[in-house]
Length: 321
Image (cartoon, rainbow, N blue to C red; front, side, top):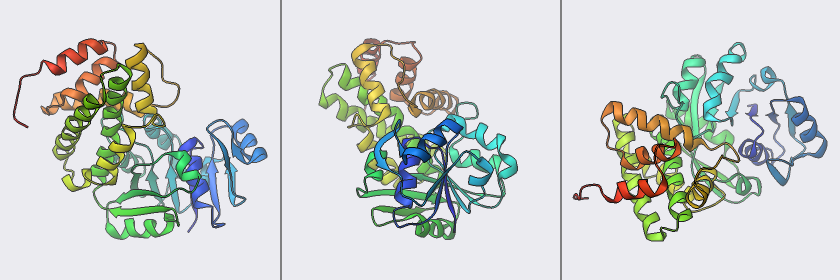
């Protein structure tokens, strides 16, 4: 079966490298001619993933229709750009497997990636690939385990077999909502943990935020029909643990700068910023108790300072765990 990766950022490039290690043909789509020319000439993503060579079997293209013609397409583009991309290229979408590799909730619609795909491409099979992973690790061939979710186990296992490699191990799931929510919500908590460390509040405070944040993830996901055990797996707790402890995480790194410097502009796509706003809005509408997420949304929106946010969280009424 043919494979294409749409999006030549760090993660998309890393996935293409991993999938092409055994000589399998992989198409890698980049959005402009200059990027395609640079990738093709240097066989390396010098801007996003320097030092990781592209295997010879990767064909770089700027032709979206060509990439979307593959039987399995990995959509490694930002969550907030996903709906627009699919809408623009709707004529190229058929019955292929479309695998979302972004982590977030669409700010405009409040929907997760698989639902966005299903809306734009109803004939395609919508899937989500998520879990604890950094692009540099995947590209280097370091062991990485992820969850692949689809609406049916047959579909999940079919693509699981296609995309698994010696170092990239995929676990199949049918809980699309749980996998999507875990990947989205952990980014919000990672920003909170980054703020905590950047502000000098200590490791104990980070552990408390992770724990209470995980409880919020469970509540939010359950309210949307997700299975609790999914959130305890790779795409939930596993990804949360990784993202809240490393500056390789864009979300944690952004929070770290916020905590240390106050207002700051993200240096790269930081999915948790828009997701925090979407989650806070949905939580208020549905009556879901999400104090950490709502506080982080307020900080990111400029409505609270880090000091105010800390005081507000610590001043919440005492309760049983």
